[in-house]
Image (tube, rainbow, N blue to C red):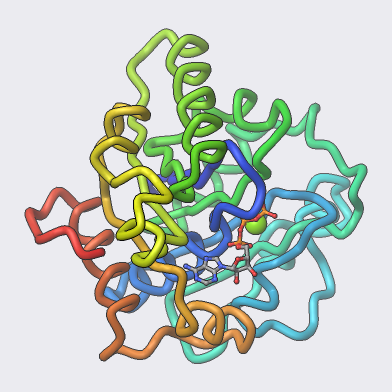
Length: 243
Ligand SMILES: Nc1ncnc2c1ncn2[C@@H]1O[C@H](COP(=O)(O)OP(=O)(O)OP(=O)(O)O)[C@@H](O)[C@H]1O
Ligand SMILES: [Mg+2]
């Protein structure tokens, strides 16, 4: 029975798809069958990050019942345990009437992890919050992104009756900007959001290259190790936080 993770942010461009991609690769490399579901209609990204060049059916086709969900799911090359359900290319596609529970019940039986790449706006986050086990909030360390992440977190907490599990990943850290005091330090970001911190990723050429070319991060790279550490911490293992 898959655990469902949802990657969210208060701002566009914070790095949600990047986190989905490399965290999913880390999970799959541990032998866990992992599905990434891309839910931001009109703004496909993960086909590029996963180097998938031909898409016949997508999430929109599943919603409109033009195909079975498993016909739209594609395996990621060179990654046996990793699959993608690509986003609809129709910017106006809305999933208001979709029975999320039913759809994800079916998928949960086939996978160990399901990661949802959500848009940073719109009702969809609130519509599906009841099926999510863990929210991963991605924020860049700038005042606007952190404030918007905090607003999102407060809203989510106020909206839900039960405690929701939310954790923080900081992305696009510039060491130079930290040193020069141009951006807040990680402690103040954690204070602002009041979330458990899983890890921080630098602005990095390795990430850019991996994303643009649809390849994995190199095992010897710091960024690969950061995603490994995030994976371990998500599994409750006590490992050093890498930044
Ligand atoms: N740590 C990083 N270092 C360098 N480039 C990065 C890093 N994280 C993300 N990027 C790049 O920044 C851009 C935005 O990242 P990404 O698409 O993951 O953000 P997003 O939050 O999913 O955006 P959207 O809100 O549009 O869905 C992409 O071009 C991605 O390759
Ligand atoms: Mg995205």
